[in-house]
Length: 301
Image (tube, one colour):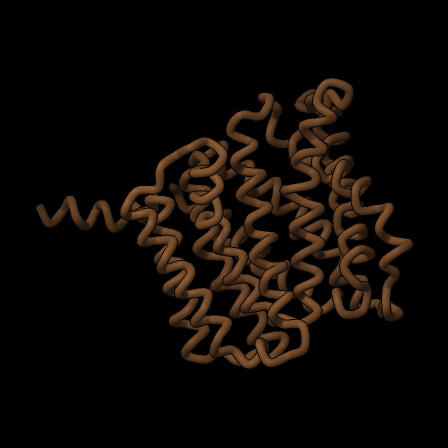
């Protein structure tokens, strides 16, 4: 991983960590359905513009909607619409830092989904990681003052279910039709927007958005969804999927940082210790080992 790719990785972590900040700002005013419809629509339109530019340069690829619409629908539901809605629902109650850390449990859920779906046995290392992850979540949530708010328990369950939804999408993607990464992002955003749209009349915005709220929504759609996907797929192309997924360990750090800087959220000992335990559990489940640690171990032999 060279300097340019490292900068892309840090930028992606900062962007995705910021998505929880923007949802925390906008969700109480717009509600889950309206907020996520905006997010998906803005992302889809932005990616459509990027796709048009690529096509003009002879680099674009057709979506193949007639052929792959079921595939886009599956990704649109489990990788976009459902988790986005659940996060937006939880963002009305939970802090951005708690949301960011709970999101990092997706690989933990992935191990369980793999065991059930693909009958992949969980190793002892993986089982220890799952136990540590559960303990880290309990510590993080149990000692945080937000758990005292009305509806906090339901919000925590919604957030963990959103992480589970991501793991279902990842498991599905392993056996899904071979579709270009950009087409996956573009098609799934349109599919997600279509799925969420019928919910809007039944879940109207509880408040009137200000210019600041709409700026947060625009950033959530264009930056945190559209641009983030482009960076992510570039990373996959340059360094591979495993290295790109290092962002899982970095985005909670930025989620906590942005929450503290812009929303004045408190960073307690339980935030730091709980986050560290969750990320340690995730590293055990995924088998993640930073290259510099491997290099250090090799140098010591």
